[in-house]
Image (cartoon, rainbow, N blue to C red; front, side):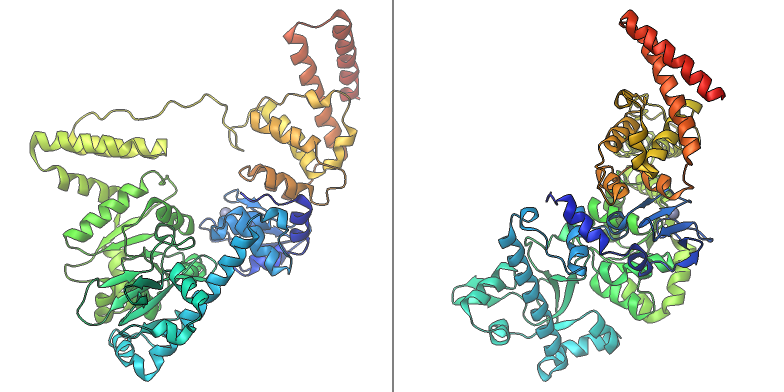
Length: 562
Ligand SMILES: [Zn+2]
């Protein structure tokens, strides 16, 4: 991972307005010092998602998600940390420092390649509306795609025969080599040859909306029916979903996500006012894609053809889903009538009927699982045994303990057999969280929270405070980090969030009502007292040390009473 100097991260943040950034995705209303809106990370009817312009933080009181601008883009759009930094730096007109980008050459190469892909996209799109593209236009019009949609998705046409790219991109040897590197040309016996010929073209964009590859469907008879760009450094089929960057916001807004099998299904949905479809790129759906889908929507509907191949594909998707699934998710599976796909059904029945069909026929994932097991195992005692065995193996891949137990019970009901308890032994760590917090733990949390809210308070800590022990490892680490925040750090909270991106407490503390100085003094004394007791219990102290600690304890008691 690229290492960015903290001064650079500060600079990026100081030029980024989190309110403006989030307002692109969430409708925000001013409320006191903050802005409020409907949380994009969980379903809700009344706003509990707050954004603070002063602190440049967001926090949801409903689901506990929170953080700064970096965190928002990572959670909301699935960017990696370096991607977020690069993206926001670029928006702010900053150049990523050389030290952070040791492969400046790589970067430049990547940019050239993406520019080239964009120009090729343009060239394919131009052909589609020219005389040469009549066959492609016919195809899309037969499939009832309106022209504005064709433009929006930048659909194109690769004419039959060789030489189109050389003609439109120039015969410069370097350009040709680049076209080969991005998978658009390959070296044949007579020099470079076009990969896509006589095909309608579906540009495939990454999360940032940049075209990184293409899918092409043949028009005449021929094989393969669908052809994709080969894997390149920025085109990884198993990471991408067709429609993702185009539909992300609409999926969140409508709280509806339909996973379909092909490009044309995604587009047919969009043409019927359902711009909420995503499709894998001609391959079976993988775990990373499932993760992405569930991050975007917790109750996606997976649509499959009703034939044997569709059943197999759905079973594979279900298997990929198990390691990711938790009790918050409610994916459903819809099998279409045999011989139909979403495109054909939409043409015949329209969008409203399609949604109605989902409401009536989509099965919850658990039901899909049980039905699938019954199908695979067959009848009789042997069938039940086979089913139990298969269920066991699949349950073992589930990450959510409680969900696994619930599913296991369901499978036992059907098989009438005892399944193995696949629950992994848990470490006996005390549970954190607002609900079951013990009084002492609450004290320690409040103490660290007060420091996070105002790291300057570190100066007020007594000697030896760096040895305070806060029991819970996470809290201890956080505390140690707070102690080491430099006095001239302009964004101490952001520094902490960067150091502990997973810790949802930091943004919560930073946005909740600030601890007063009086309260902080009380917390500090209580923590110190607790630590003295702990030290005294430990033994191995000199008589002098014991006397000192006891004296301090008496002092503290006096202060706390007074
Ligand atoms: Zn939320």
